[in-house]
Image 1 (cartoon, protein in one colour):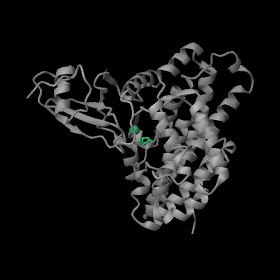
Image 2 (spheres, rainbow, N blue to C red):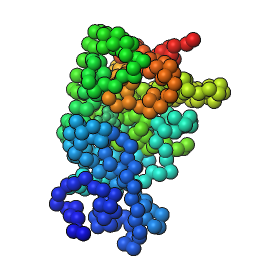
Image 3 (cartoon, rainbow, N blue to C red):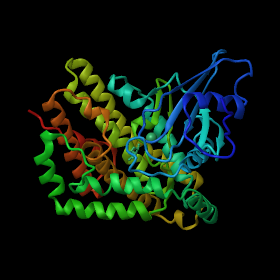
Image 4 (cartoon, helix red, strand yellow):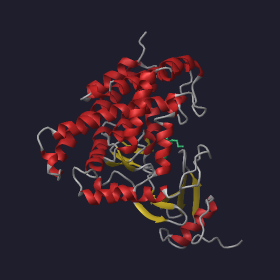
Length: 408
Ligand code: SR1
Ligand code: MG
């Protein structure tokens, strides 16, 4: 077999290529170890390989392909792998212990290797099994405050921050968000995927609502122009590895300088999907109550802990002179909460009727239950967008979600 050259030309690797790559391009394993490799990616974009050695050591290798896995309509620059490896290193410094360790990045093969987190579970899957994680809100708010406030103009030297804005220009991935989150769900785009029982509801309440559409236009342009913080850009529960006492954020390939509330809003919306799933599928009353109570508290805590940690970090780290003017911090934080509500709304709607769905909804087997959960997501989503200026604490956020459920 001809030797594979990993140094001159990019190609998408098979499991066998990855074994050869790890042997020749990395020094992670001892030379005499037997290696096995499995492609384990279940995301919409990339290929993720786990390579195990006979000694028990293992490593993850992630490669960006030239098109998205979910559909080859999306031509996405493999440079996203550079963005991902660089931002993981930055986030690892700002929020130590909350992201996997990156071992290497290869700009020819557009791949990176990192710590194997096989003792963790993807949070969406764990929530679908109705596992609870009482420390989650504390962990994710530390991660978000540290990465969002510390990369903003409030804290950073403004020229250094602008250099980062340039490094993290991410046009292909931003275009996906502009289209899939802010545009297509709000008109009958061919790429939408509406559960048939909801067709009339969607036509009237979403596509037929001109006021809602106007608000989404405002939000889309804010997303494109507000270079506030170096955001993760896709912080849903499928981008979080979790176990009882630890949380790791993965997959930051959508990172760019955008509105801080984009990350917080994604966390809120994706906890809401887990809540809606539990609300319609759980039959045992006590387990249902316990699970729903855990999610309710997590939603409330994400907002309230984000606020209190943000205020504390601002007092400690704000460096801009004008940021210290009385009232400015409160104004800035309330704007993040407004953006959080708006983005939670868009995420709730786009994951229900857009191209990229979530298992929390699609796995609901009873048609009536799924329709009820999806309607509640759309109703809460609309309320969040239309009334986004109105929410200042976690209880107010949660009320939108509980009010959206049709009670019989
Ligand atoms: C074409 S990618 C579809 C979705 O998957 C990613 O995780 C992002 O959320 C994106 O919108
Ligand atoms: Mg992802």
